[in-house]
Amino acid sequence: MLLYCSLIEYSDSLLLIFKSKRNISGPIIFRAYLECYVDFINLANDRKYGYFMQASFHKDWIKILEEQSKGANPYLSAIPTTTLDSKHMLENSRIELKSLKEKGYSPLSIFKKFHRANVVDEYKSIYATLCAFSHNNISALRNRFFFLQPEKETFDIALFKETDDVTPFIETGYELLRESSFTIHTILNSGHASAFLSKEPSKE
Image (tube, rainbow, N blue to C red):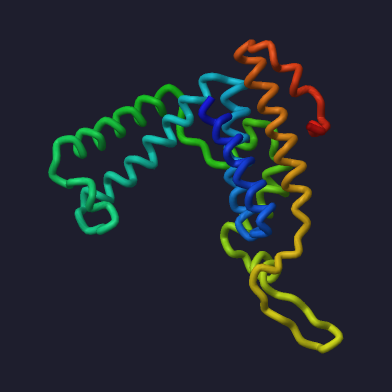
């Protein structure tokens, strides 16, 4: 349910960004949206997928607590290094992660998540492109700020002039949210799943 709630809020954020013509952050948010959708589908298909998510949680938490225990990182100073609580949390996460791994639930890479959701083609195309924007790939930077002026044999660098058509983001985001809505209502047996069968946006 929390993943579905995230999809709703990501959708709302994307619409607000595109309506305000601040497209630069659109691909970055859409990347997070797509990752959330993959987790949602995996969990919907197999409730035990939640154990993989728990494994990822403990793996990441262990990294933070181990770094914090060194006492040298100022950004983690809010967590006292000498308290029994922090030591207990670290030891507990190590135990939990070890137990999950022994049961076959190791943290999954992003590729394995997409593979498990049967959307590898999307990973190798849509997701790869979105990552270029998140990681400030040269192609993404050129697309954002670089505007050729061939008649003058020069170029301009400009802010807030993104020219990309955002329609693919809106249409894909709509379809993913529709599918997710149908899935969650089917799982909950709410009686409203049929409202999300149509692939056409509501005219209301």
